[in-house]
Image 1: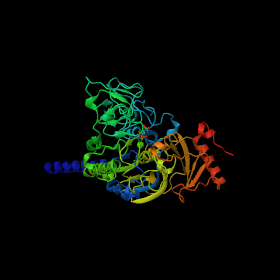
Image 2 (image 1 turned 90 degrees about the horizontal axis):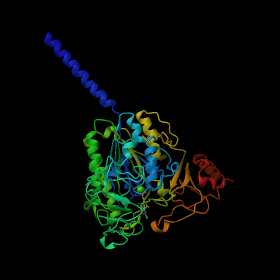
Image 3 (image 1 turned 180 degrees about the vertical axis):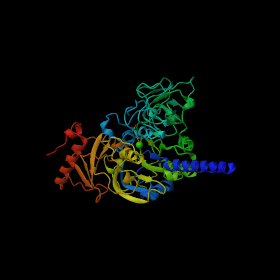
Image 4 (image 1 turned 120 degrees about the horizontal axis):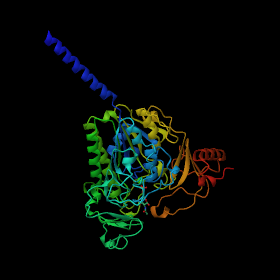
Length: 512
Ligand code: NG6
Ligand code: CA
């Protein structure tokens, strides 16, 4: 009898324990992963129509989830887009949200709401692995001590990053605020103003370079590649460019494995296919398109390996994956690397006009996919969505109250349950702004073509207003500003309301 009682108690205990376990598994908040590429174009992915390049792992996400055809980065360059993504705030509200040098201070206020900070309230583990480019420190950074504030201070528990871009110094990894592998006897010095005595540069020592610069990129030489900015010391800490993709992939995979039992948010920010394009030798020649194509295939492989890890760890059914790019494509972004010469029939912009830096569509309209195995049904959505909307949508997903003005809760759209996207969106390209509303885009007059010739991209500047119907004219060939004055007026009024009166380019607008 006593035995029976004991075993009944035992059984009950086991049952309650296993049901508690089940409950905790069921109640576990979904993981969220943002896979973010650098300069990947709308037309660079085969699921988005590329025919000369095959990206099976990006395609698996795009064809197995919601593939947005009107998905936007906030901006046509990196820093502002990343700012918009993480804070849910239009980057033009922050005058520092412009392409930053490697020495720039952190541009996100440590009191500001960010996706990782918001998720911390719900007990998430949070990490960034890859490209940062949102500034570090408070200015005048000493790279030999704790570099702070940075990602750890805006909500990331773990941050393994490169400070700015692959083409900017310091060319070292930063592990939770400390330069990885730094030898204290060989301290790092960094300057964007002057070279350090005796240090070779791309400009003066072309014989030491293995990659040739075309414009900019003629300062310190690291691994044979001339960079933007000057750097001295830190020899043991310098990254290996050709191993960067594998290195970040390992960090991302290991972090996920270590946190698989907690809800997690990972911002996996790959560096490809930004310049300098340095695919690992395994990928050299794989695309037939030179380093740019090879770097895209390398990134595709990384994504596949990363997804495999989620699968092996049994995490895919409980993980929302967002895949996108920070801005549109560019071929020659400052190095001679055959991107132009070996392009063949490939069109990195797809059917869109412009490219990186441009107010035309290819600047900001990017591959944008949401994937969640078993939760999101495959579909193609034409809804207007922006990366800035992830903050409010994720808030809804995990049940946090956040007051947001710019970021819109589009969770149902991201989950493929609704096609009601945004009504309107301000797009930004190197401090100029335009309005997308419904099927229309209005670009105010802007002057200046400074980088146009160098990168061979139309920036979208014109002396007159431009108004295009993107549904009928995705390539932006028919300017209807003159023939549709009523539409133009309506667009200008919305633009003015959304941007606010205080902005200088608004004051120049002719609102007759
Ligand atoms: C530009 C660089 C370009 C690239 C870009 C930032 C020159 C001439 N050009 O200033 O190579 O680094 O900044 O790209 O230096 S982004 O994707 O990070 O915005
Ligand atoms: Ca970029």
